[in-house]
Amino acid sequence: MLDAAVFQGLSWNLLDDFRQLFTYPFMVNALEAGTIVAVMAGVTGWFMVLRRQAFAGHTLSVIAFPGAAAAGWAGVPLALGYFGFCGAGALVLAAIAGTRRSLGAESAAIGSLQALALALGFVFVSLSHSILTGLDSLLFGTFLGITRSQVLVLLVVAVATVAVTAFAARPLFFASVDSDVARASGVPVRLLGLGFLLVLGLSVAETSQITGALLVFALLVTPAATAHRLTPRPWLGLTLAVALALAVTWAGLALAYFSIYPVGFYVTSLSFGVYVLVRIVTR
Amino acid sequence: MFAQEFMRNALFAGTFVGLACGLVGYFVVLRAQVFAGDALSHVAFTGALGAAALGLDLLAGVFVATICGGLLIGLLGERARADDVTIGSLFAWTLGLGALFLAIFTTQRSGSGNGAAGVRVLFGSIFGLNGHDVRVSVAIALAAAVALLAIARPLLFSSLDEGVAEAQGVPVRALGLLFLALLGVVAAEATQAIGALLLLGLLAAPAGAAQRLTTRPWLGLAVSAALAVGSVWLGLTLAYVFPSIPPSSAVIGVAVAAYAVTLPSRRIVHGSIESTTR
Image (tube, rainbow over all chains, first blue to last red; front, side, top):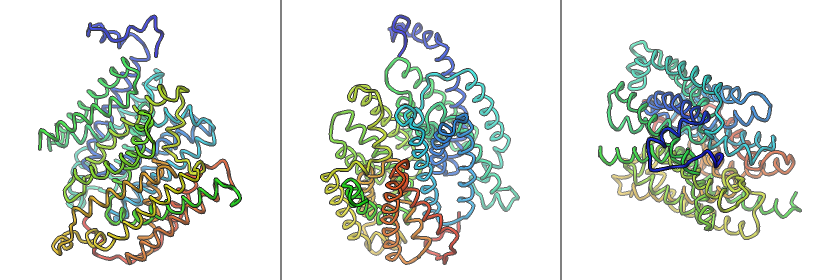
């Protein structure tokens, strides 16, 4: 993993281990990026679970993969591919949701969109002949090699998405809990739905650059699901979701640093463990 | 095209995989369980890589994982239907586990450090099937299709109106579980051919198109199966003619294109399935 002469591995001195985590710039960058991503995913994930849009959220997170693969193939910056595809995906999903068809028909449309996105992604990866080197990190992410500028871009996007969500939080909550009453009271329900999907797409596009397209979803859904189990109160729930996302991300990164196994495994396992525990306790 | 053995194998196996996916997919869409199909496709990935990491048979790993996954999804929810959030949390973790198995496999077993096995599982390898693979996959697909048709009548009843079906003595919960186990079998079956990540398209798109074209259930089932098989044929042909397109992507591309064509068609709204309360 690292230069053997410098890397000390896990010792019994926990304080020393803790200090070691912050020794390397790449690890500091990873921890900062993880923190930003966790806050963003906690906030948007909480609303995603509230609005019962887990399938749409998963589809959006998967769309990040063809975005990156297309950008890699066309030779444009990866971020452009991520944002372009996730933005377009959000628009299509909003159009699907807007038709107010039956649940089965809607999920068929979402599922088809998702499969198409993945199929396209595979075409782009095959075309650019980077199948074995690039695919792994596109799908499962890597926390190594995150640069300062990536962290800065992440920060800007995160501040924007969280600010927009906070600004629209009250009407969005109202529209999510009871869309008919909200519509009757003059809340622009459809506009909010579209706006939320765009924000979700934006945060997914950002997050998947670090966690990989397949693992964003874990950070979106599991801490939020746990928070919803624990409390129905919105502000407390949002805070809990963010806190849980932060805790599992930090712990996951630290564990991954001291072992040879991928960070995605630790993050998903920790968050799922907490979720199961909470489910058993709040039964 | 038919002179090539790999192409004959692919078409033969693909036909039955398409048939099974089209039939099961119709019920998946009717019962609004596409997300469960999505989850099972990811479970298939983890099952295959888990078996690979442990040095076991890949196909057996996939089948065990998806059937157990299907039953688990059924058991977690009321009336054999778990909610999206439960399913989502479960398969997010499954994916993480898959990432772990991939890491173990690539670092310890294959030694070369590449993710070729992962790629095959994720996106299928229909052009790489040998005669034995084909026979196994045709037999399993046929068995799944027959099993589904055998329970189709009560399953249709309980999918359209669960309450009434239950009152009439239809074992709704057992049927739901059995259906999810069957979905697991089909997901595992399709993993080999078109890959864990893409099989959702063959479940959702032909069935979605069939439901737009007709409201009659038996006709819909037939249309869904026919569209799925047709997508496989056309997709494989396209991939043969244009070698730079991966076969599984071509199949899904055709299936989704067929679905997109049906979208503008106006269909008669029928109250029992159409929900107006959303």
